[in-house]
Image (tube, rainbow, N blue to C red):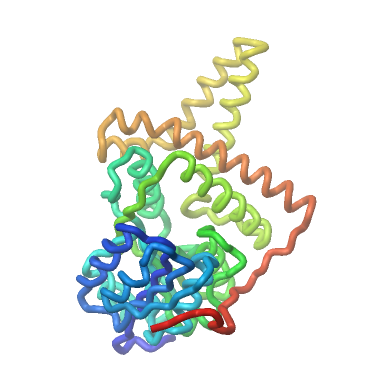
Length: 348
């Protein structure tokens, strides 16, 4: 059991050339009630003056000359933090004014809770189609997931500082924004700690997604390393993006694809493709109805090929990652890697 008496909160934000999103992030944090005892901004090799903006908002700034990724940046922020609770927020995320107080209240009422995560809200900041699709998909997956979470989330994740330090923080082997938060969550669960998905804790994602960036992030920085993590821990949790329904959807997507290719030799197999498409649509119908409620039928129909493409490259990444694992048996660090020193770092 952990202390429940008025825990203090340190907000930690890694930033690399945050741009206007970062100003919005800091502006919303300034409206928090109650306020955190400190906001720590780790400027990760930035070149656009984000650290100066952070100082204007009264944040404590840690500067890293060369970009090392959000895992290292968050770890450095955690080392400098004084709060009982670490509240990690991404630089392109806007919290609601009640978020800090809500986190304090949850930990006060749940003395055995080690960490909690939130979700994106259902009103993404960017109006573009892909931004709306991607962020609403994330919102839906979290809002329909189990409250007994199996992972952590760096964009809006809250954890007791003593536990974070004890676990060694985020794995700094991830040099890009990747699955460093998921990996930490797996280690927390393996150590017997409880993580809660608090569906009422919602933040707004401000980022604009473009097709190339979305596919690159999903395939190379999430799906492939996540496959390695699954093989490392020999654990395929029925939660969030790894639900059984998603696995079945991957199989159906490839069945459709194979049937379509088979149609070149035998047009009859195109009928099979249509038959496979029916259960794939039915399984994901609740999601498509959610999209329709948010933006209408045309938007919902436009999301279907993108969603099926998601199942395609997720399955492809799992196959490639599995082949790599079986052929190389590449070791993957199972521990965090809090920086042992702060060399070449400037702090105000």
